[in-house]
Image (cartoon, rainbow, N blue to C red; front, side):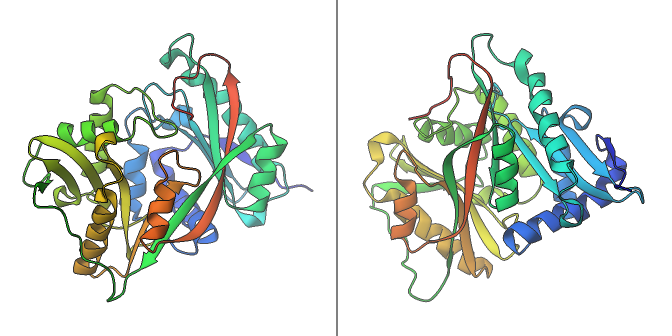
Length: 327
């Protein structure tokens, strides 16, 4: 007889089972895992995320959680939600992944009332595995680009950061106004693919929640200023989701007027220096492989290598006017 599965949203009581499955997914995808159970639980409490509406998990007859799907909206308005689906290898080829993917496509309509009536809504997904990519192809998604996970193993020849005298560095420990750092972060990324004209307070609320997880201390927020003018910003996580021994550059952005002056490279060197001070042997980041600003080439020139390639997929679930930056 074919296996019998139960489909339902997760509840807080399912955390242990979900954590085990989430760890299995990371081990299969990355070969490592760097998140604590508390960090995973905190993601369930993310602003705007509703377990009952945004998750669908699969349980085998013995009660073990064997697959999950979740919808995430990382920006406001949520015109580009993302679907994440994972099925444990022992339970593949049973139609579970297809059922979860179709659930996600239908459930993404939940976001429609939260976006302008004229807005185009696109459901995104990522996969670095052949079977996951085939699943997305089979359900109407189209591969539109690639995303790189890059890193560098630190060594004694890593350059020291050097900034011109007229520039000064300001951390959030010295200037504890989160709004200022979030505002500059969004200003530097307005011309990056996927950028949305988001209300500042929505972004601040999201970052307040992220910071509460303890992985982004105030000294990891660094703003470069020339006099009173904002020039560039870097935000770092003490560890990456895939590797506890890797400092992760969450974002690195330069204001348009200050690009091509080497500031981003020096901030990257600063991240390398900070990692060494913390005893971290590696620094990592994620970048659009066809970055509109050429960020991927900058990272390559600084000695970073591509560890993993993710195919990025899209499925239009409501036609309309594209409100995000696409090129």
